[in-house]
Image 1 (cartoon, rainbow, N blue to C red):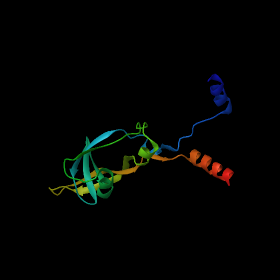
Image 2 (spheres, rainbow, N blue to C red):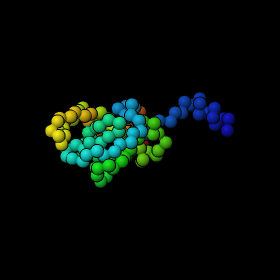
Image 3 (cartoon, one colour):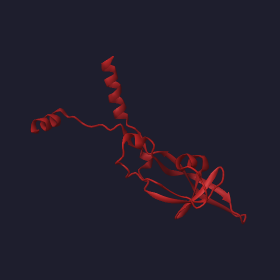
Image 4 (cartoon, rainbow, N blue to C red):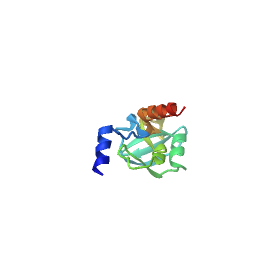
Length: 137
């Protein structure tokens, strides 16, 4: 066992993960939201503050929408998942502002959020795979 460990250390064998965390998701955290108002093109959600998320994107990520529905987004600390699970994970990041008119006729501006992939392809892994493919040819 010691010989095997010594061989791995001397050979410089490093594990290169297939996916890495999307740098844009680094500052996100686990957040619980409540749907405040469903409308098109943006749905208003609340989590301490009011946010606007594109309704189509929200439906793709959490399913059917209705007022008072609760959902969560995972933060960047979510690392103990399989590669397949990671491929489907998203995070919500800031995407400008959205202005809407309330029922009383006043205009309000809120922060817009969008969903992006939380995990992206690792360029180092892709490079290694390309080199392996060239050796096989």
